[in-house]
Amino acid sequence: MKKINITYLIMLVATVILSSCLGDLDVEPIDPNDATSNNVFKDELAYKEALAKIYASYAISGQDGDGGGNPDIAGIDENFGNYLRQYWGLQQLSTDEAIIAWDDATIKNFHWQTWSPNDVFIAALYSRIFYTVTIANEFIRNADDALGSASGTFASDLEAYKAEARFLRAFSYWHAIDMFGNVPFITESDLPGAFFPQQIERADLFNYIESELLDMEMSLPAAGTNEYARADRGAAWMLLAKLYLNAEVYTGTERNTDALTYLNNVIAASYSIDPTYENVFRADNNLSSEIIFPLAFDGTNTQQYGGMTFLLHASNGGGMPLNGIDGGWGGIRGIKDLADKFDASAGDFSSADPEFSTIADQRGMFYYDPSSWVWDITNVGTFTEGVGVTKFKNISSDGGPAPNAHPTFVSTDFPVFRLGDAYLMYAEAVVRGGSGGSLSTAVNYVNDLRERAYGDASGNIVASELTLDFLLDERGRELYWEGHRRTDLIRFGQFTNGSYIWEWKGNVQTGATTDSYRDLYPIPSNDLNANPNLVQNDGYPQ
Image 1 (cartoon, rainbow, N blue to C red):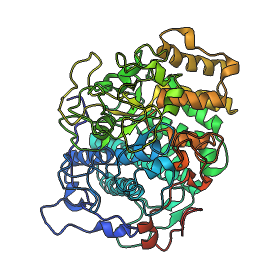
Image 2: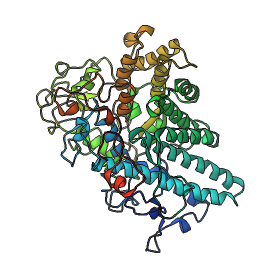
Image 3: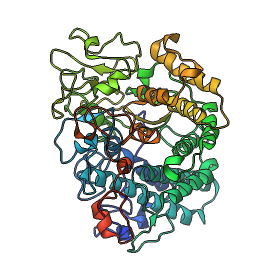
Image 4: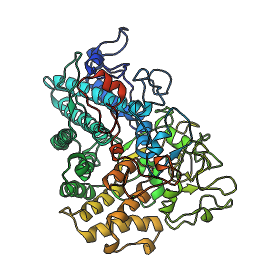
């Protein structure tokens, strides 16, 4: 099997309805056969299995792993409430890269940027973030207890496992600081018992995440040496670099020099640019030398209608090639503003070549059949208005079936961090004035990516062309649909009330600016009402 072996344990937080009384989660299930912390951590192997549950919390949302009605969090559909599915939606649907046709609850509000504090999708992601934080805290607390008597190989393994759990907690807290700003804050020091967590200021949470990553860095395996889909120092360096590159948004103080310090570490490690861009997004992308940290999916072993199964099925329909799945759901697609970045227009596509196979920048993987699709979106609810995106595929790099192929559930991993992103982050940090990098090196890194995209030097740029405007567009070309766009647009001042508008932004077909307070999502109403310590983000009803 190509993936990390995930054992789906029921941790202390067996089935929860998330509220701010997080201590209430620390009760034992009535059924004595259900696992709790009293018997989950019964032997050395159990710690690795429990660690796998934390990793699994990003990919699947239940105890059985098949979307079959045994969810981690009661009150949220197991497939709808999937961590990656909701994270992707909030990061992508609100931008110039994706729009959705469905009428599920308030889902269309994201591209329109008209969401409210009682939005079920916002609450679902918020719940997933703090579920992962909670089970990471429980793991760390139990690992600390065990380290008092552990020795030999088990002690060293346990230290490494604990570092990975701390990384995953920091990773989820990064999602919290990026999307929600000031949030409830709990660590392993908050012992079981009902209480209302305090709200931490965004800048203070930044300092906490930074200190955690710096403290645990050397306890993680060296970059590129851990088991596939597990965190190592390369993942920690990338998360630090992400934190520092966005520091001015999070704290008001830029940290571009610090970002370059850790980007240099990443670039000097064992990763390398995959010679074929498309292979980074195929079902055997676990073989790619470019991926630093993925979320692993497997058609046999991680079966759920969220995650990558959602991303591949929901983006298919209207005659698009199936690329290893058994049918499309006709939900998410791109808009013309995304295709514009590749200099692609409706006239470039034909019924004979609906994927525009001769596009100069081969990173642009689209589908548009002019006999059945419409370029300009007049009805958001019609899937075939817009442009299809075929970037992710459930087939192998040789065109054959996916590993552990399944007709519905996919085996394509989601690349959270990869070297191509590090190259563009390096260039941006240099252009923004950071020390520790050079403009000539930045241009070379950008051109490395563009030569892969064009197949030659015809798309190369010179130093005078390496501007922030260029980099925002280039990040769109290199990284579209990889869960970065909302964060990027905010960092560049273009998400809400900047000068950049796109189709149906602001619920206007031609696009309109929106209020800048929407650079943050609101604290969900249910948590705000449950916890008297919480204050709503500015601009939203208190």
